[in-house]
Image (cartoon, rainbow, N blue to C red):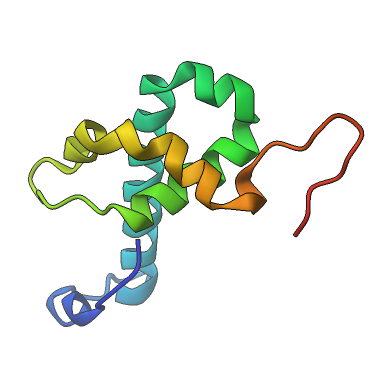
Length: 104
């Protein structure tokens, strides 16, 4: 999740941390929860890809298809029919053939 940081003007620094750090923590948690939801809804794909590849695919998917509903960010789950297309469109996210190494 990236984009406009105008919201930082609306967030106050805390006594222990600056607002950009606080918002970064929020962003990370937000994306992590959405990827976790994808993982729960696509257990077989997760099993096939493994944790690292699935998480990379999930983050790429969330970035490519951001939620349009701020009050219900899990609306992206209704759009996950495109998840396999996200994997096939990103060669670096495809599982390796036996005996080969991933290209980076």
